[in-house]
Image (cartoon, rainbow, N blue to C red; front, side, top):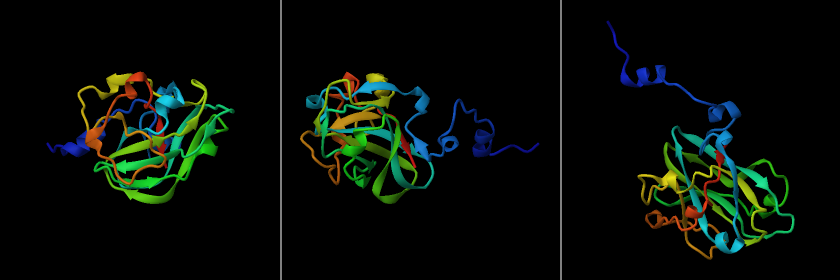
Length: 200
């Protein structure tokens, strides 16, 4: 009697609970968006100028052109500038970044695809989606769809492989490289940083 090789058997026995990114026209996501609730942007004093990272696993080679966010709440009175999304690889090298997304955060509470200035080819591996916000806003008004999982999401993990983390202060642009060994949870522990992201 013949037997399946391990990879074929694994595929044959794979049980999928919920939608896959491809079933929503996406290439990957940090987790199923149906698991995302609201998280506040806290105060601008607590978040502005800090780079927050969410780990994402890419399992096949893709051309990465855009990052999707779930903008849950808009602060019409906010004053935003120097706000960016970007992608870092496991060595901490910036692979792609958006132009300033400040205007995109000022209207339209909805899922949004924010394009990278230059698409790049992402081979399978570990990546980190970075968010940088700057400006002023009313606490609890500028909100993003997020898991709300808190510090438990980093159970049994340590830098440089934390799923949710933050780095640096006083940044007005995404640096060309990050030292991922310096990942911190100083603001992640307060509930910020678990944003849902999609890839297209």
